[in-house]
Length: 414
Image (cartoon, rainbow, N blue to C red; front, side, top):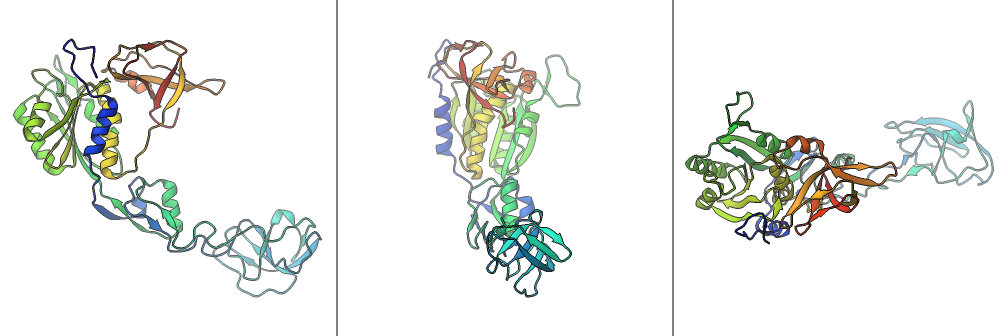
């Protein structure tokens, strides 16, 4: 693919080609660890889990009411029963029952062996220790059978899966207290650039605060990651090479920002070539064209651009799916929607473009999107105000207001 923004017509890799190259290169880690269930939220299940018990373990009542045997009662007729005891959740009624008797029972309590029906307390009339069933009572209702949720030895959660609170609740209900998960990825990240200053220090002329490391720290926040902030590395090839080599010995993945372009002080690509291998470098994407992907020994490397919005886009489109594949997470497809655009979108053909937009719900219930503001790749305020990417294909020449566009929400909340 050709980028018309450059007169020497560099051939660029498409987004799809780059993603395919990453998928083919990366092999999921094999290492596992055993953890306690309370620590499992968000972790990636390594081995499928099977239930050691029936859930529920015994027959239980689905509501507060009265448990009785329906066999000797004529259906469609009113009937009176004597209450001979109470079955509480956790305190079953164990005595025997005679014909014409019942037990007061509460939701979740074990149903006595003699009973085959539970009638809701709202359906009966109570007079001392006698309850009157209405003519419309129905037999064999309101009892949860043992194993009605999960049978013993049934698969509870299949690997691989990123465990949700719902999964953990299911495992707990079956009495599972420890599980096998994929080990955490060890990820190191740093920024490059003599112009960058850490927070807390005054700015000299020509300097800026390093926002990229804070952006990456937030993006990398995941229960499956063990993250190291390696700070700011100066535009010095020897220092960059030393950082690469040291970090590669301690991490599964290294992510840098800045220094991946073609300027005289941009050393990332040539240093990566010296220390390891470069799988690809330039992509047909905007923002984010200069993106280096490669390997140093057994450590994967992503060299992201220096502009913060380019960092955001390239992380979401390339680094995030790569980390998920490496960690063993199941393959997922991000949500994409076709909605009407309320703004005119300018674009030149050549690169697939990710503009920052605001996705919203109209009064009629339909979704629509508008541009969040100026689209320069350094403008973090616009990114902060946006909630989606507006995706424009490489050959697009722009969009008129009112046309349909593709959006990728940042989350499931609008």
